[in-house]
Length: 99
Length: 475
Image (cartoon, rainbow over all chains, first blue to last red; front, side, top):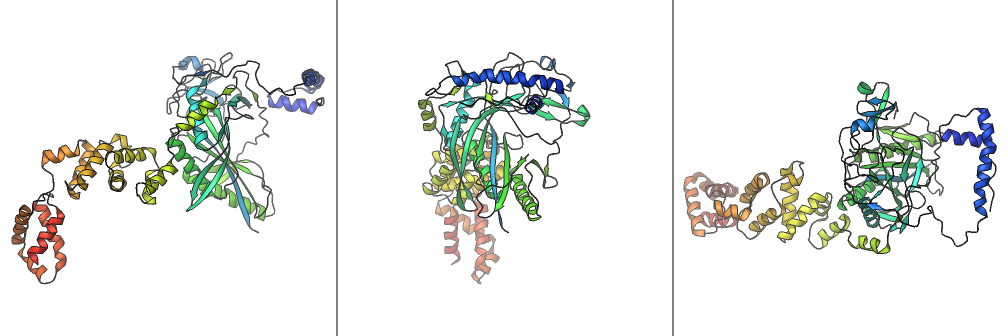
């Protein structure tokens, strides 16, 4: 079992960028040991002997339920757009995306 | 220096369901923006996805038809990225445990057989559509989420394709197969079948892969070959100039007929896939997979072979009849009513397609059953080819039962020799000049005289008998 290497500040900044978070240098510096602590905590799981145990992604023991292919009315347009940051025509307004 | 291209296609096919993959919103194309949305497909907090059974059935059918191993357990994963058309900030897809793996597609490229391996088929939800409408949105864009959450399969082909022509043949065969399975309508223009191509080049004989570019936006069969061939030549020119191919996403510009690098520099992708906690694994029993395999319909390639071997069609006609499911079903239904497959194929490929003028066959009044009846009336000598053509045009626009129409209007062929002789004599008497010319050696005037007799009989005289009587009278 390998113990994860403690994250360096660059790694913290990369993860923050992927989450679209802008961190100041001070925040990134404070977060580096915090993230290391979280990872070390989770790494304790690696101490459990899982030999012969099939990997699973869920704690529930059942298969995903299925529904029939029936189409139903959804939200009416006004309700659907009620939380839009901006409404353009009948669409959700967003910054212009080229290509 | 001689190069070869290495091409892998990733094809997204929209499954023909009524409702979306994880919610009950309709999948109908062409609705006004955002009328088919709900809490689930808009990604509202607390809304939970529930999987559409029919989407699973269709995905399994496609995977089995492509000879894949369908896994009894597959897993849903979140593919995380930010883009305005993705309301949850992730797409529900499948990653390290996909629905199916290890299949293949057999195709024919310029007369020779090729097999392209299918690496995997996984299910996923579609994203929304970004709309750039300068009038309405000005310097902004807007998003229409009607398409968001629509069920797709992604079919990942092995990098075994070597040219634009092969890529186009692969796409056509895949489309034909999915359409005959009723899995996908195969409409490239509406986006229900989409193709991305990974293209790289290497020196002939090299075993490592060159740096690849990803081509997007190939939304027509004409573009598949053109875009890929352009990209192959572009990469060769780059390498021959001593430069390196840059790994990037490029778009096909159909107007300029070139590929262009996307302007926005995409960050190196890190999708941070992880199992979706909202969705337990998709579990299929071996028995369910087995019964799906047992109920697969006959695929177009097998149909084509059978039409040649068992029905005696030419390979060319068999290929035409197995291109579109609608045409093929019409043909098979007609042959079920009358066993002259060649005759029926000729009527469909020559007359029916011309009369249809691009309309769907279902819009015509002619049914496969009435075509079968019409061909039977010709085959048993009841009506002449000329009468059949007239009747056919009417059956297409007005419908009706051929045998009843023939009886009602007295269209049956005249086979009574005495009656035909009387008509022939009348025609000869009225065309004394032609008769003299024939006897003077202009024997090709016979055709004209046959035509006159046919006309006088209202098209009903049996042409064979007319010919015999005329030759006897003139000889």
